[in-house]
Image (cartoon, rainbow, N blue to C red; front, top):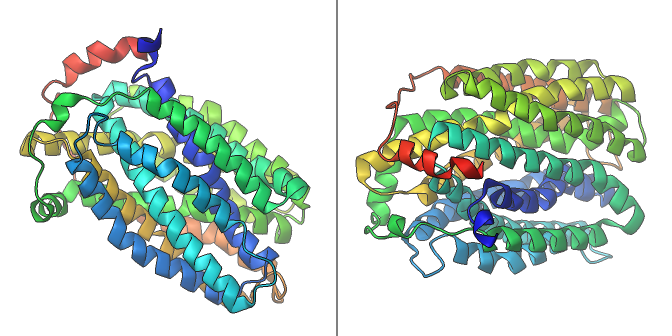
Length: 440
């Protein structure tokens, strides 16, 4: 019975669930917590995010390189994940537990230091967990199924991390909310890793040295076009989720308690839509499905502009959910093909470095989100919860609809700037798909 769950996509997806609950709560509410609740100035908040993104530029690729070169009896990725579990729990709690009575400069310092700590540990987790999907599941159909299952778990986590979070912090406070989510993460991440068994044959060859590894990655044009396009769309994911509490307050004019209703309606709808997208992927080429998801995601943010109360906000959010569901499922197919093609060329599986550089490109786009928040806020006079300016409604109507529309339009254009062609069947892919298909 135990063997049945080893490398099963269902137990592997527990890792996505574990990481996304606190990660989504973080991305959705840390700006709201520090700016709106604690009164940190929007300029200082933007500066802190900029500094930790520079730190991310340094640590992300290095963690991926070190992961690829790790060789232990537990594998390449699992030791990193096991070591990061308690550190991530601590970092997440510290972000939402600043000491009372801090001056604005003291609050800024706490915010910056905990962000840097949180980001470093989160990078280790995402790089190593993300590298396991293309390594364990090879073949378009297998990856589509594994990705759909993983994203189904992710949507449940998104629902908890967004819709349930306001209820929890309203009842027990932000710090206790963070403790609850940290414990939830620890349990499910441990269960996930106990049911992962890395493939020994993937670690037998000598990895590329640092400079050649980066050189091969940088030369891969498909990789760069794919990830730069995704980075703009990923920016929208973070921007929309972090703006929803502000959107609810200043545009929809609903209470904090009703924010949970809004978020629940959006993310519950995404769960079946993820599997609609899986059905669609089976009917078309993976690259076409990815591009289609970007186009539909672009169109889906338009209704957010017209929201004015809870009902219209829910309706607009459900429309966004369809585009979001496609973007959650489809990139794993194209990204896996790019890694497989690299393995054919170099004779090495280098999921770590590709996942890390991909993560860096994607996370660096968070600077766009931070700058958008700052610039639009300055245009309309929004300084923070204590000084929202004369027109906070316009501030957050633009931030949740117009800015995402522009970013997604850029993502679509970039996705068509080169032709993505891959071999129909990479070496060993068909045999491997047949071998593990019973698990899916």
